[in-house]
Structure formats: C-alpha cells, structure tokens
Image 1 (cartoon, rainbow, N blue to C red):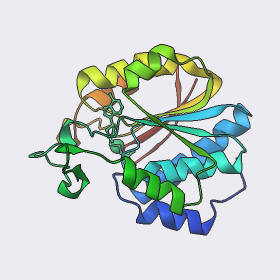
Image 2 (image 1 turned 90 degrees about the vertical axis):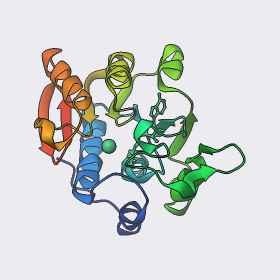
Image 3 (image 1 turned 45 degrees about the horizontal axis):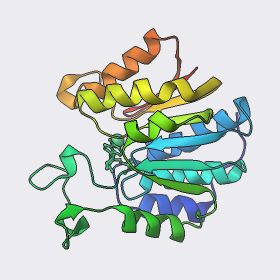
Image 4 (image 1 turned 60 degrees about the horizontal axis):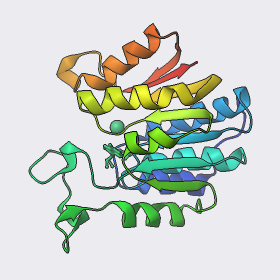
Length: 211
Ligand code: SAH
Ligand code: MG
C-alpha cells in the first residue's frame, strides 16, 4: 500500500473543482493510481471523460507523485446528459459563438490552478477516434466518458486492451441497482469481471479492478 498522501493544496483544488466526482471516490481514485504505479512502474495513466477537470486533479496529482503523466481525454463538447434540456446541463459552459458546450477553458483553468500543467496532458478529441491510433501501454485507465450503451461499451473495447498486465481499470457510475442510475457502466464492469479483471475495491459508484 502507498504510504504517501495527496498534497493538501491539490486535494483542496480537486474538492473545489466543478464536476461529478464525490470526494470519497476522488480520494479512492488517487489511491488506486498510486497502487497502479507501484504495480506497473513508469507507465502512463489515461482518463476518458474529464469534463471540467475534477477527477483529473486527483489522478494528475497521483501521476505527478509518480513522475508519470495522465492523458486526459475528452472532446469537451459534453455527453448527452450535459446538453441543453438534460439533467446535468450548465448553461454557462456553452460557447455563445457556436451555441455548443465547451468545457476546455474551465478544464485548463482547473489544471493550471492545481499546479498540474506538467503532469496532465489534455487529449482533445473523440474517444474512439483517438483510440484507433493509440499504441501506448497504460498503468491505469479510468472510464467516465459517454454513459450510453454504445459509447460505454465502445470505450471498454477500445481502451482496456491498452492496460498493461498488472495494471488498473477504474469504472465510474457503476450502479448494481437500476433505481440508482443507468445500466451501461454496470454492464462494462460485469464484462471486465468476465474478461478476467479482478475487483480490488468498490467505493460509492467507483469500481477498482486489476488486470
Ligand atoms: N470525470 C468528470 C466527469 C466526466 S462527464 C468529473 O470528475 O467531473 C463525461 C465527459 O465525457 C464529458 O465531459 C463528455 O464531453 C465526455 N465524453 C462523452 N463522450 C465522449 C467521446 N466520445 N469522446 C470524448 N469525450 C467524451
Ligand atoms: Mg462519472
């Protein structure tokens, strides 16, 4: 188990950041990434679905502590549920010139003020498109992108093959009870177990698995 703890100032930035990551689950992400670097030293981390950079701060801090980098992948146009008229829409994140969501400026601000510009590499693009060209093995993968059936299963299929042996897979918004939330993240969690990933921990809706 890692003995290091997250620097207070960075953790405060994570807690204060805008987004969809409860503090106890963010802390669990930090621990999981620390463990991933202990198990598979030197390799990079990748996050799918950064939004305004909240989960990114916990993971970027872990990358910084382990002298590696976090690739933070998002097209920054929001998921279905972030669009106008949906539950998780924030009108002030819309770029008025084009009438579309743009979370990249807020993301950059979050990462800059957390002091993580050197440890977080933003990858701005569509997940399956980037995935088509990706070759780099990963110590750690966090899936929190599109939560519909097609995007969630596609992220699983596209990205989990890049996790190195002994590396870590985290999945967010896993709800075994349908009353608590959508099915697809739970379905890809079941797929991971079926594919031989071993569950290490569950914290809220976060699942931590090892390849
Ligand atoms: N982890 C974030 C929340 C992510 S919300 C936090 O801690 O707050 C989901 C994000 O996935 C959105 O920002 C959306 O733009 C992104 N997303 C959805 N589908 C995507 C795709 N196909 N490619 C890249 N990003 C995608
Ligand atoms: Mg989430």
